[in-house]
Length: 101
Image 1 (cartoon, one colour):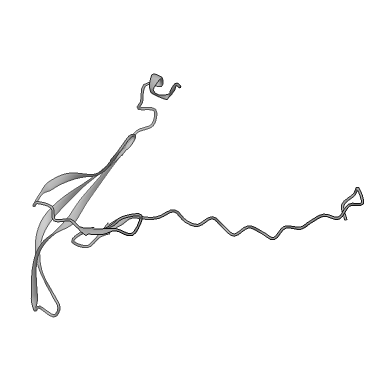
Image 2 (cartoon, rainbow, N blue to C red):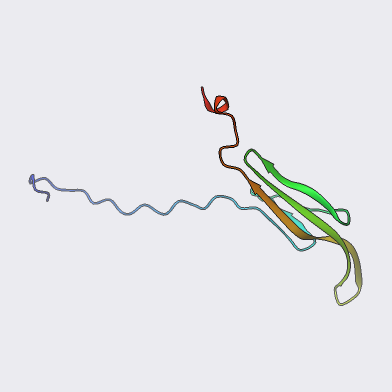
C-alpha cells in the first residue's frame, strides 16, 4: 500500500528495446545490408568509392586488387579488398534556413 492507503500495482520490468538492424562489409568485400540483404563488391585497383553518402556524414573506401586461393588451393580468386576507409562528419554544416519549418 502507498501512503494514501491504496494498493500500488507493481508492473514487471519492460524488456530492453531490440537493437537496430546492423550493416557491414568484410573480407573481399562481402556487404551485409541492415535488413538481411547481401552482396559482393568488386572495386577497381587503387580506386576510392563513396561507400556511404548521407547528409552530415560520408564514408569512402579504397580497394586494391588481390589474387588468392580458396578451398585448399583449388580455387584461384581474382578479387579486391578494402584497404582504406575515410570518414568525414560535419556538425552545423547546414544553413539555418534548412531547419526552419
